[in-house]
Amino acid sequence: MEHLACFAPGMLALGVARAAGQLSPAEAANHTRLATELAETCWRLYADTPTGLAPDTVRFEPDEGT
Image (cartoon, one colour):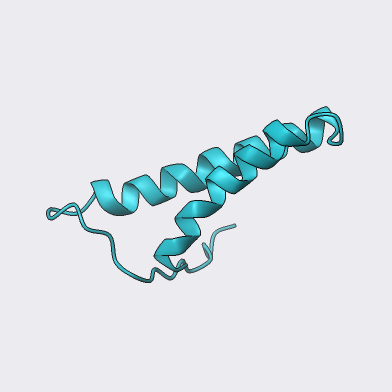
């Protein structure tokens, strides 16, 4: 994941707000959940480092247990 992916939550949220009549409630809820989770991930990339700087690129490995 590149750090610019952190713009995606805003795009998802804007899409939900602007296309309210075109999305089903389930689709809107799913997009909102994805936006929230991605925003939390991006925030943690910055908040969890001593310097407050996030890496430029992050790789997430799939969990072997799931």
